[in-house]
Amino acid sequence: EDNEMGILGDIGRALGLLKHPASVLVIGLDNSGKTTLINHLKSGTTSREVTPTVGFQVEEFSKGSINFTVYDMSGQGRYRSLWESYYRDVQAIIFVLDSTDKMRMCVAKDELATLLENSDIKASLCPMLFFANKSDVPGAYTNEECMQEMNLFNIRDRPWHMRSSNAISGAGVAEGIAWLADEIKAGKLTD
Ligand code: G3D
Ligand code: MG
Image 1 (cartoon, rainbow, N blue to C red):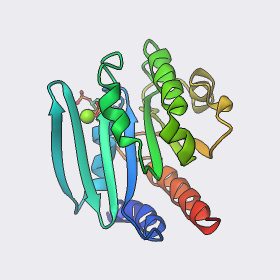
Image 2: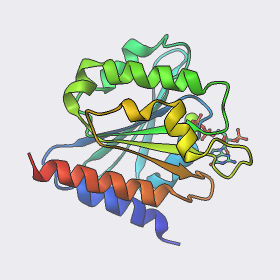
Image 3: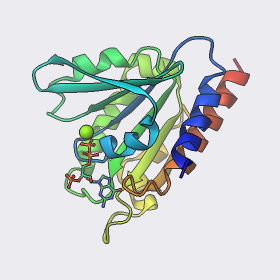
C-alpha cells in the first residue's frame, strides 16, 4: 500500500513550509524500535550511516529538505556530548519508547529529563512526539501508564503527544506523524 508515502507526505508538506533544511531527531533507548519505525518513513530516501566514534552510531537520511537523524540514547550517556551536537536547529523530536521495557523505563525518563534541560532544546520549543511502541505486546504499559512513567505531564514548555504504536505493522505511526506535521505547521504560521 502507499501508506508509507502518505506518512512522509504529511511531514514533508509541513516541513516544506520551511525555507531552510529542517531537522527531525528520532531518539530513544536501544531496542525501542527506532530502526523498525524509520523504515516506514524512509522509502525512496537516501541513507547513510555515520560513525563519529567507536560505539556511537548515527543514521541520517533525508527526504526533500527534511533531514532525519537517528541514534540510540544508550550507554549511560557516555556519548551525550556527541549527540548534543544534533540538538541545534531541531524542528521536531520523535522519541521512541519501548512500552514493554519496564526495567529501563526510568532510564528513558532520565534521558528525556536531561534532553529537556539542554539549552538548545529549551530554546527550540520544538514539538515532541512520543511513540509508546510495541503496544501489540501483551502486558505492555498502556499509553496512560507510559505518560505517567515518563513524567510527560511535567512538560509545559512545548506541545507533546504520546501515541501507541506497533512499528512492525505501522499501526499508529501515520496518526503520530500527522499530529507532528500539524504542530510544525502551526508553529510556522505564528512565526
Ligand atoms: P532500535 O533501532 O531502537 O534499537 P529496533 O530498535 O528497531 O532494532 O527494534 C528492536 C526489536 O524490537 C526488533 O526485534 C524489532 O523487530 C522489535 N520491534 C520494534 N518495534 C516493535 C513493535 O512495535 N512491536 C513488537 N512486537 N516488536 C517490535 P528483533 O527480534 O529483530 O531484535
Ligand atoms: Mg536501531
